[in-house]
Image (cartoon, rainbow, N blue to C red; front, side):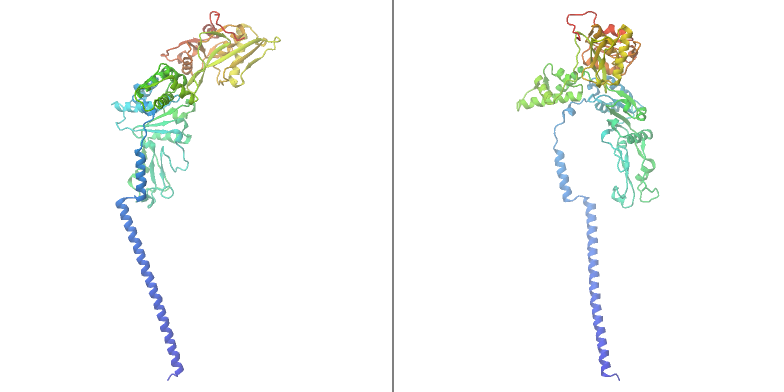
Length: 565
């Protein structure tokens, strides 16, 4: 029989075990409750997630906040100002384009054809390149023999805003591929790891025209990639994330990666740059059309037409005044629109036709700090030691005023020959060549004279085309022979006294006409470069310096002749 102590010990152990069991049971109950609580929370979360997903599917991604923002945007979009003057006064038909008949015909010959060509348009700003490109497509769509459908798009972009991204993250011109990790492909594609091709402007222009303004500013790498698209008429896509065997890839993505995106369009590029500044590979794939600078007659016609569209009357001389201060159609319309706004403001709330006066235009010109674009004008007087040469800046020609003064040297054989330092090294070479020709033609040694040649205004001349003008100015100053001031001349002088060919013939004729010259003298070798329809100025040719002297020196010395001395 166990003793009392043993029984007591056993009871204590049983009591302890029972206490432990109760404690463990309590813990298990707590754990069970927590488990049930967690499961309930998860069920609630799952329920809420399912509910939100159903709501999204029914109502889309919109929330109260996004709907308010959309409403605000729609309110802003409903507020529209009137069209700008340039939009309202822009030509609506090719027949309304002023001063570009040759360029319009040349462009239409290349666009309105069963086999349209890519084209680059060259010319100064504000002469209608963009407007003509838009209207050319509209005209081509009306013709049955062209491939352009009625819905053919005209996609316009500025080459200065397009940038090449070497990471291929984005390319608005050609298109790019957004990977599913970093660049955010669509959610349904990102979840399955599928890259998403994003189409560019070349595909948007498929079947129509892609117009790139200032195409000369397009980055070289982007130009090279554009050339590939022009050849293939498709854009190819590539991505390290793409797996052709992935069953999650949609058919349209497979098609884009396998075949590329269609990009069969006509490229029309416009630039104010010289053709030599354009990528030669791009030029070789494009026809080239040159837009002409607007004459004063053209600008006057643009002003008169714009005034009629505005419903305003203009005083005599207003169109001529505006034409004196700009040779851009865009700027001429801007001056007219400013004068119109000024007249409206001064009239106040009154009614009736608006009459634009010279005072309105002068006020616009003065507040805009504008200056006449032609400073030097022809004159009926003959002068000694003064002649008009011709130069070209960009696509615009202008007259160069060249002066020469000659004085007997203080000591025979110690004369000096000077010219502006800013005139350029080639002009200095022309002076030395002319000095040699003077001695060859007249026997006069210039070392016995102090001769100073001045290019008025300090203009830099980067070519030899002022050589003949410099020679004639020197002869005039030394011999006291007057030169006609209504004639401008251009040409390189050779050391043997020949007049050699030069470039920029059309632009130089334009510059002479702008300055009011009655005659322009060109090298005989440039006869073939002169357009047949030149009007408003007499074009003469010189093969030698003797020919030039006959055409420029006044036949008789009139009382109004000025001398350089």
